[in-house]
Image 1 (cartoon, rainbow, N blue to C red):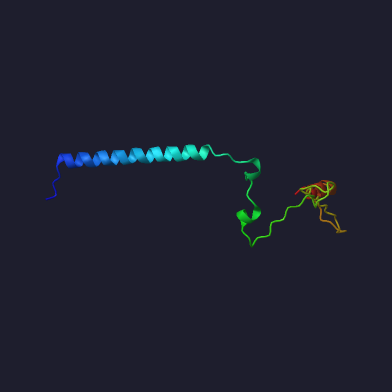
Image 2: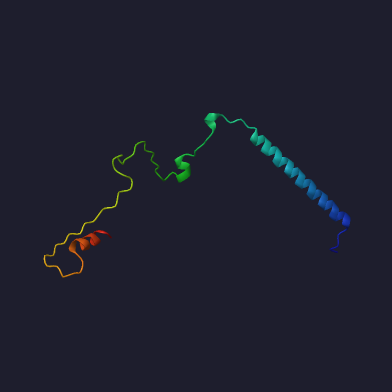
Length: 107
Protein backbone atom coordinates (compact mmCIF):
# COMPACT_ATOMS: atom_id res chain seq x y z
CA UNK A 1 0.00 0.00 0.00
CA UNK A 2 1.35 3.44 -0.84
CA UNK A 3 3.93 2.17 -3.32
CA UNK A 4 3.20 2.96 -6.91
CA UNK A 5 4.80 1.34 -9.86
CA UNK A 6 7.06 3.27 -12.19
CA UNK A 7 4.58 2.77 -15.02
CA UNK A 8 1.82 4.52 -13.07
CA UNK A 9 4.10 7.47 -12.32
CA UNK A 10 5.25 7.74 -15.95
CA UNK A 11 1.67 7.62 -17.25
CA UNK A 12 0.65 10.41 -14.87
CA UNK A 13 3.60 12.53 -16.02
CA UNK A 14 2.64 12.00 -19.67
CA UNK A 15 -0.95 13.05 -18.97
CA UNK A 16 0.25 16.15 -17.13
CA UNK A 17 2.54 17.09 -20.04
CA UNK A 18 -0.28 16.60 -22.55
CA UNK A 19 -2.57 18.80 -20.46
CA UNK A 20 0.07 21.55 -20.29
CA UNK A 21 0.62 21.44 -24.05
CA UNK A 22 -3.12 21.62 -24.79
CA UNK A 23 -3.46 24.60 -22.37
CA UNK A 24 -0.58 26.39 -24.10
CA UNK A 25 -2.11 25.80 -27.53
CA UNK A 26 -5.49 27.10 -26.45
CA UNK A 27 -4.06 30.20 -24.86
CA UNK A 28 -1.97 30.92 -27.99
CA UNK A 29 -5.08 30.46 -30.16
CA UNK A 30 -7.10 32.78 -27.93
CA UNK A 31 -4.38 35.42 -28.08
CA UNK A 32 -4.25 35.12 -31.86
CA UNK A 33 -8.02 35.56 -32.13
CA UNK A 34 -7.99 38.58 -29.79
CA UNK A 35 -5.13 40.19 -31.71
CA UNK A 36 -6.85 39.76 -35.08
CA UNK A 37 -10.14 41.39 -34.17
CA UNK A 38 -11.12 44.50 -36.14
CA UNK A 39 -12.00 47.52 -33.99
CA UNK A 40 -13.36 50.63 -35.65
CA UNK A 41 -11.88 54.02 -34.81
CA UNK A 42 -15.20 55.18 -33.40
CA UNK A 43 -15.35 52.20 -31.06
CA UNK A 44 -11.90 52.66 -29.54
CA UNK A 45 -11.81 54.20 -26.09
CA UNK A 46 -8.56 56.09 -25.58
CA UNK A 47 -9.53 57.86 -22.35
CA UNK A 48 -12.12 56.51 -19.92
CA UNK A 49 -15.05 58.68 -18.94
CA UNK A 50 -14.86 60.65 -15.71
CA UNK A 51 -17.74 58.65 -14.21
CA UNK A 52 -15.78 55.41 -14.71
CA UNK A 53 -12.63 56.85 -13.16
CA UNK A 54 -14.06 58.77 -10.19
CA UNK A 55 -17.47 57.15 -9.72
CA UNK A 56 -20.99 58.38 -10.32
CA UNK A 57 -21.28 60.32 -7.05
CA UNK A 58 -18.40 62.66 -7.98
CA UNK A 59 -19.01 65.70 -10.14
CA UNK A 60 -16.12 66.21 -12.59
CA UNK A 61 -15.94 69.64 -14.23
CA UNK A 62 -14.02 70.46 -17.41
CA UNK A 63 -13.44 74.16 -17.96
CA UNK A 64 -12.18 75.76 -21.15
CA UNK A 65 -10.87 79.07 -19.77
CA UNK A 66 -8.46 80.01 -17.01
CA UNK A 67 -9.86 81.85 -14.02
CA UNK A 68 -6.57 83.56 -13.24
CA UNK A 69 -5.71 86.47 -15.54
CA UNK A 70 -2.38 86.52 -17.36
CA UNK A 71 -1.38 89.70 -15.54
CA UNK A 72 -1.44 87.91 -12.17
CA UNK A 73 1.59 85.62 -11.60
CA UNK A 74 1.00 82.00 -10.62
CA UNK A 75 3.41 82.33 -7.70
CA UNK A 76 3.26 85.70 -5.99
CA UNK A 77 6.62 87.43 -5.47
CA UNK A 78 7.82 87.73 -1.86
CA UNK A 79 6.78 90.86 -0.03
CA UNK A 80 9.54 93.15 1.18
CA UNK A 81 9.10 94.42 4.70
CA UNK A 82 10.38 97.78 5.75
CA UNK A 83 11.28 98.69 9.30
CA UNK A 84 10.86 102.27 10.32
CA UNK A 85 12.58 103.79 13.32
CA UNK A 86 9.87 105.38 15.44
CA UNK A 87 11.79 106.01 18.61
CA UNK A 88 13.05 109.56 19.05
CA UNK A 89 15.59 108.79 21.73
CA UNK A 90 17.93 106.06 20.61
CA UNK A 91 20.63 104.40 22.69
CA UNK A 92 24.26 105.16 21.96
CA UNK A 93 25.82 102.56 19.63
CA UNK A 94 29.18 102.03 17.95
CA UNK A 95 27.49 101.75 14.56
CA UNK A 96 25.66 104.39 12.59
CA UNK A 97 21.87 104.43 12.55
CA UNK A 98 21.86 104.01 8.76
CA UNK A 99 23.88 100.80 9.06
CA UNK A 100 21.52 99.42 11.72
CA UNK A 101 18.48 100.32 9.59
CA UNK A 102 20.06 98.48 6.64
CA UNK A 103 20.64 95.42 8.85
CA UNK A 104 16.98 95.43 9.96
CA UNK A 105 15.74 95.47 6.35
CA UNK A 106 17.43 92.10 5.63
CA UNK A 107 15.74 89.13 7.32
